[in-house]
Amino acid sequence: MIFIPMIIGEIRRHLRDYNPIRVSRSLRDTAYKALQARERLTNVLSREPTIEEIAKEMNTDKTEVVTALDAIQDPVSLFEPVYHDGADALFVMDQVSDDKNSDNTWVESIALSEALKRLGPREKHIIDLRFFRGKTQMEVAKEIGISQAQVSRLEKSALKNMRKYM
Image (cartoon, rainbow, N blue to C red; front, side, top):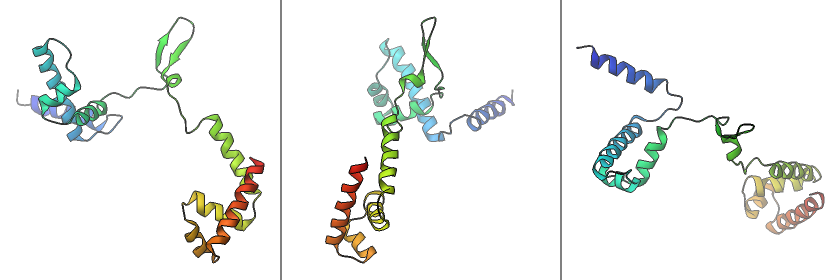
């Protein structure tokens, strides 16, 4: 009987240390408290409680409850079937969009790279400083050693040339 708390502790430590996603202990504790509150409220209300009701029961913020419950969810493979109609399966991956790495973005990136190759070294440097490093025309002028008006003219000319090739 004395070994039961030690065994339970070892099981918890193993589950915590070998979980595929690391979640802080405080977040995990909040999630388990939310689960307990949900179970209590379900028994009292005879229905599934809302997140607001669970948060009120715990005297905490709704977003904290949502974050904690999300943190303890098991990860799902992108290749997990969501729907199967006999012939073709619909996977999680089919339902996730990636705006950052779309075909249009990829093509635009290549076109931008090709347009940049057509600029002279000075224009290329100005475009890099202005649009990829976020510097103002005044900062670029100071760094290169020319006036802000010259930076403006060179930038405008470079953008015009780039548009021809895009």
